[in-house]
Image (tube, rainbow, N blue to C red; front, side, top):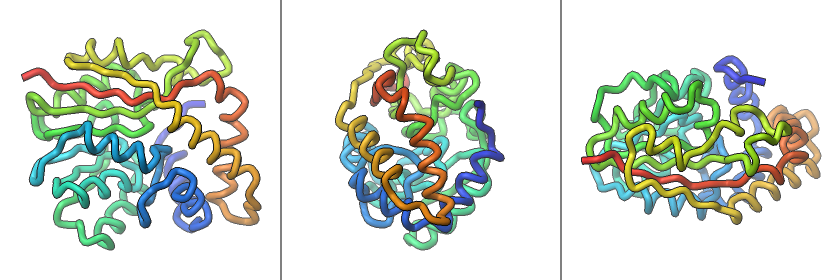
Amino acid sequence: MELGAAEFDRWYADRTDSPVADELVRRVLGLPPGLQSTSLLTGAGLDEVVAELALREGQVLLDLACGRGGYGLEIARRTGVRVVGVDFSAVALEQAHRRARELGLADRAGFRVGELTGTGLGPASVDAVLVVDSLQFAEPKPAALRECRRVLRPGGRVVVTCWEALDPADERLPRRMREMDLAAQLPSAGFVDVEVTDKPVWRAAEQTLWQQALAADAGDDPGMRSMQEEARRLLPSFDGMRRVLATATAPR
């Protein structure tokens, strides 16, 4: 099943009124209080991402496929950077704008409609790019990485968290997952200093999240029902994926 903006709009709308789902995600993934996650990066994983981005106060971070903006806003709060969030879901971006105001970060956070393969930003306009758990939705994936390369200033960092198939021929997995090969795709997009690292601890936390979501009483909570549907879809083939952190640099 290929997912577009309309499907994600519905998903984000469901999460708006689901404090139970948000609290479950924060607790199991160990996220900072108040971080509205739209992905599965853990709190410890976020610490690693911040270190890999190597940002300085006043620089510009592109949070690509930002969703509700949770991770980018948290990085802006920690580092003093300005964050530009791009996503194709207008519903998510509305929530991100609202959260930036609530956190007092509206002067350092901007959000705009765009695509993984077309951000609408100028060339060499950002100091770092973060793509959390979303690159698999790009069509085609190499075009999204080339877009990251285009908007990065020389020496800028890209950090991608994602999943890859252990066996690209494993048809239990969606095509979008079987197409992921960051160790080959990042150099092809023009990046250097490419590193792709397995993160089994992240993977274990994610598995725990899906299991606890299934065990919860969803009641009439749309966000929890959505999580349970996703868990039932993912868990049967969970052993076919590996969790990865990929980092690379735009050449100077």
